[in-house]
Amino acid sequence: MIEIVDLVKRFGPFTAVDGVSFAVGRGEVLGFLGPNGAGKSTTMKMAAGFLSPTRGRIAIAGHDVENDAIAAKRALGYLPEGAPAYGDMTPRSFLEFLGRVRGLERAALAGRLAQVVDEIQLAAVLDQPIETLSKGFKRRVGLAGAILHDPPCLILDEPTDGLDPNQKHEVRNLIRRMAPDKAIVVSTHILEEVEAVCSRAVIIDRGRVVADGKPADLVARSPFHNAVRLRLIATVADLGARLADVAGVTRVTTPEGGTPGRDFLVVPAQGASIIEGVAARLRQTGIAIETMAVEHGKLEDVFRDLTTSDAARTGARP
Ligand SMILES: Nc1ncnc2c1ncn2[C@@H]1O[C@H](COP(=O)(O)OP(=O)(O)OP(=O)(O)O)[C@@H](O)[C@H]1O
Image (cartoon, rainbow, N blue to C red; front, side, top):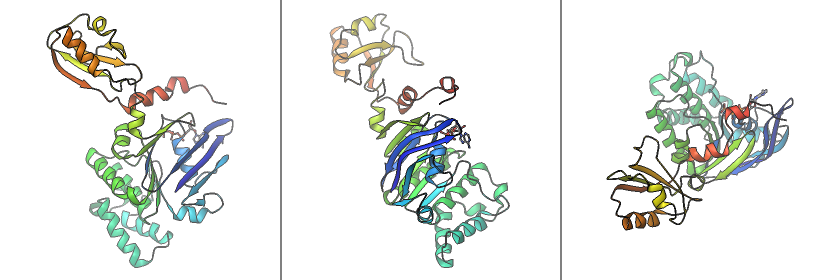
């Protein structure tokens, strides 16, 4: 439903998007991730037809964004960064305006407006000028505008930015509810959000795709996937040496915030399952365990491994 093929965007000598390709089908929620300046918003602007690509092709519900722009825009709901709106309008007049521009009939528009206002909980501010709304409500007005015409494809640039935890939860639920019938791309910096709502994640860095997979498969690439977290009853000074030759163990460290000698993180090679070997060795050597658990790893570890830090990125790209 959303197809992006070899997309490139250059601003003068600077390449912001450098050969990005991915496709999103109905029922998929794709988390689009990357550090600041990686090229996420630029990619989304091109997909929404707001910016012309230097090279590449984008199709929305089968319609080419460049050559069949109106049909492509009809099939797309787009929430841009910051969700610009006309500040002196109220959410009601702004959404009615968008509905008319979208060509919704009066009765259909009234029906959709009521539905969206209820889904996004806008009733309390419906007749208040947008410029007087809190950041979270402004964002929600933008989101309401993106879904008003019930498009099959959605591109949402940081939809939960500026929302409080309750509102974030509501918007994630809304995305989950809409997901079965739509193809959705969501850019976010909140990695837990990806695990909570996305069926797939694409990570870009310096304009290039560096990972594309299910969140659980990406998490499995964490160096801490299948690591064993231990808390011992009494201090053991040389646990590292005692576990060094257990199959699959590469190193033994003190986890962040742990007590040296009592809290340990036993790290495996390439996600190997080491829990049984570690447990057996502890039993053999008579070391008493208070707690023991297998770590899954975090998307954050994988993200940091695959993407470039700000410092490394300051040099200009060709
Ligand atoms: N109109 C423009 N002219 C020149 N450079 C631009 C323009 N728009 C974006 N860029 C540059 O392209 C790069 C990618 O920007 P983009 O906004 O797509 O990143 P992003 O991944 O969305 O970042 P963030 O997470 O901070 O929103 C940045 O270095 C940005 O400065």
